[in-house]
Image (cartoon, rainbow, N blue to C red):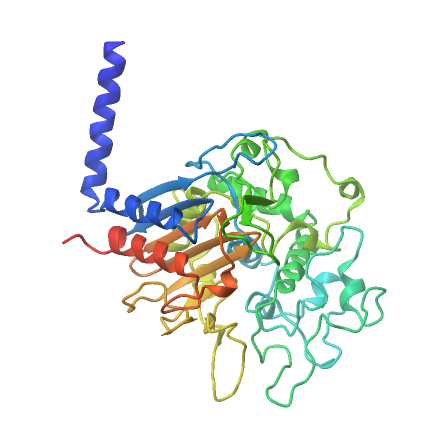
Length: 447
């Protein structure tokens, strides 16, 4: 017993020494993040945050509660290193890695007509002579729109929604129409659209002959030793035990900061739901939107750190190579950049100014309640993605040259985000506080 206590004491000292050696203000950072979570008028249900400096994880902290007393389990549980969040649109960056694996394998040409892979003609009916490519899908310049929806039941072929002759085409709201203000032809105009990634996921299925969620586990997550998956069907019993419930204070249409936390999604209480009956008859390559390529990934911040390190290390993590250096470079290269004089895109309230393949390029543009700046003093650019859905906010931002990175996942927000823009960006005030605290305490050298 004495030996065990001594070993524990020695391990603790070693851990403290390692943390001290990083130059990270561990206590100050944790205190700052705890204060954000416990804000009197803008509380957060849970928060997991992580910082990478020079390619190495130097901080990871977890705050608040993964589940609340109002849930069926009737008790609170705290988030930890294994906690999985439905990470929302950060899923797109991970999904793009899956696409680029096919490019590396010579099975997919980024600039080829996607119709040749999908097995049906994918054309904007307003621009029938302009082909649509995978590059356009991953850079949000395809001319697709979310107005007709972006997630469809398994039994609904995507072709039926996108083809003018399809049973679910309706009024064609899935396609951009010509505009007198700007050129809306495929490849000419940026608009952030979830459906792009549903189509790209279907493209993955058509080429791999494998269901999208299963492909992503076998080709990206498992080779990197990352727990989680894009659908409940792919989560293990252990995953369900660590899954964060996502919350809001009230509903999306009726916020109540003084009210109870209301579960929005993933309230499984540690038990897997019954598999969807339609899975047995689903044909890969017909409709991957039902597997959440645009935002359904359940993953921990530690898992995201491995994704970030993979990109920082140009496609390799340890002895495992997932992508070529060329594929990683192409993901981060500017595919679209806002040109105000040409009106060539929608910045979505000032947050988007440049885009790569499956990831945003943060250009350090700032203004009151507008811009993509992610540290208060500015002067820092990066690559990555943001996420927002069902009460969750998330961020995955890194500098590929200095190999510094910031990751966070918020499991629930307590006030209407539409009424809370940041001081120097389009982010919410709590996101600004989290990112700036991580940067000041974990990335900047201590003084």
